[in-house]
Length: 102
Image 1 (cartoon, rainbow, N blue to C red):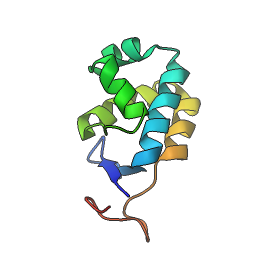
Image 2: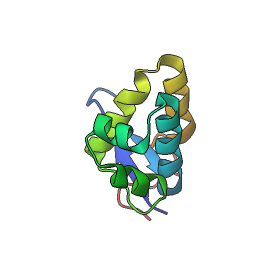
Image 3: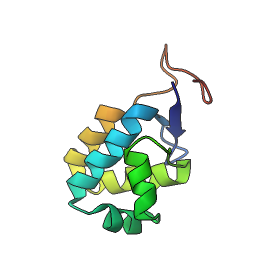
Image 4: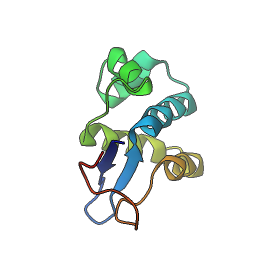
């Protein structure tokens, strides 16, 4: 299983999202924003095709894109924070794989 790990701020602990959940997280975040895939892609700086590939699990976002997604989620206050917490975990916790594990 592939994990995507990102650290938005060196002072914060890094987050990890399992690949199947990454697509669900992105779709839920996009639906929370009320944006189409095209509008969401413009907001994050990618094409709508890339957003579609992320949501369908055919491609994983870069760590830079995940930082932007996290910032976008945080703009929605408690709702965005709850969404992040639902899909992310602490990769340094016991049982979590190290970066690059499958």
